[in-house]
Image 1 (cartoon, helix red, strand yellow):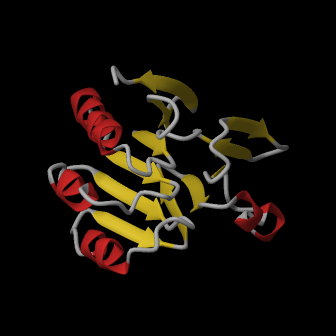
Image 2 (tube, one colour; image 1 turned 120 degrees about the vertical axis):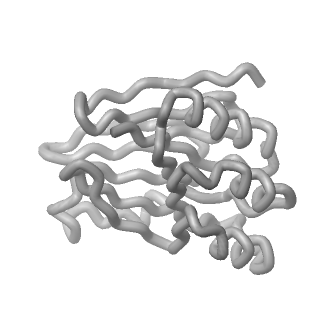
Image 3 (cartoon, helix red, strand yellow; image 1 turned 90 degrees about the vertical axis):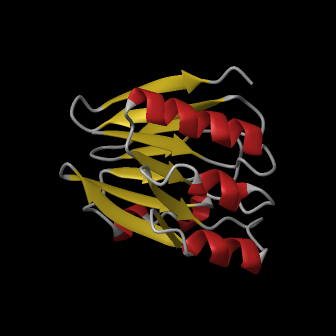
Amino acid sequence: MKVAIISDSHGRIDRLKEALKLCKAKGVPNIVHAGDFAVNGVVKTLSQFSEINIKIALGNADVDNDIVNAVKNLKNVEIAQKLQFSLDNINFFVTHKPEDLDIYEHPEVDIFIHGHTHLPKFEKLEAQIVINPGALLREPKFLIFDTETKKLEMAVLNK
């Protein structure tokens, strides 16, 4: 199973929409967004891709409660400050700020995902991986993780 990893889209709804289209075309059924997404137009954009399961960690810029609540009401979206879930026996933990990743508190987690810094990061610890996909706001790219092969690939958008 494939999981797209996105963060810090901020006002780049065009890139977020292109990322969702690419995920749909590639058959990627899951998206993790590591926060800073809640801007005008995001509800309409996410609602157009109801077949994709979207998990979002709230970011420090996600302060518009009306937008956040409207996104929470979408049936295919799960939002929280911190998210922990499993796909294909791989345990994920998602939060926005890297300082909220308490790796030693969650030894069962295989992959930690965060955003906030806008800087891509891939760090392999002993048995765990820490990923920051970078900011969709800055670069037209995001990551796709394959739970079967355990490989990470970069997806590049046209915009």
